[in-house]
View 1: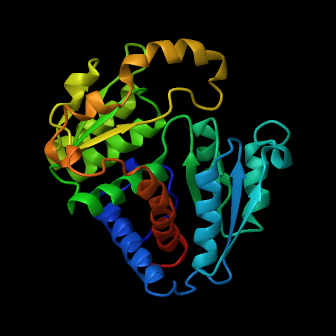
View 2 (view 1 turned 135 degrees about the horizontal axis):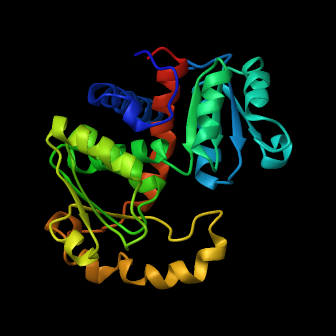
View 3 (view 1 turned 180 degrees about the horizontal axis):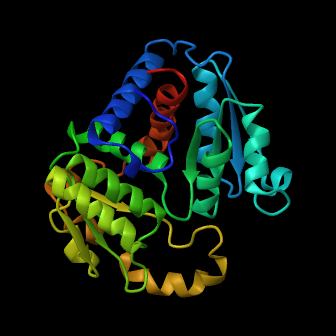
Length: 291
């Protein structure tokens, strides 16, 4: 599969996304069976962080190591992306040193500029617009749980943020029914919704946009939420905690969902976090390993 960058789930077709997920499953099984083949031997990945993250840093470093490659961390102070050094300059410098860049940034435009000038693959580790690596891990977790994404009812409760955008896009691409309940003023970007509507028209997915979290939970097979206060929103903490109080995913909300959610241990928080490693290895293998 030919991939140039991994900036957005919206950039890839359903068969292409399914291929990445199949590679992720293959690599996960291979690791469990004794270890991965060193398909990325000699390859290097720069990890550029404007925003810190436990899961993103560890999963990419370990993922490259398990595939035979090498990853190294660059902190905000070491680069000053877009501040001390222009994004174009950083892209051109790193493009001469490494085989790919994973960047976790505030502004999505910085990723676009890195992709424009680096001459090597750029992976979106998170931006203010979307979080495609998280979306792929979500999809992998749902497929492991239900055997497929198509026809599964997925409900997101909370802020229409970057995580919600990528979850909506992969659901719409792959035929899952996506519902979101969020407070007024915290909707997803209109352009992201328009793209999802186009994807859904092709896949048969149903998209539903609500304000009432209880209504969104009815009939859900997957209930999903995210932090109310992301990095850079600390000044809004008190206001956000008040606004999002009715949007807690608690037992009362879970009780409104389907039997599949209610039966047995509900939470897939940690399996999903672990699947960040496996889903990102699928992306790396397709970008750099020719899979």
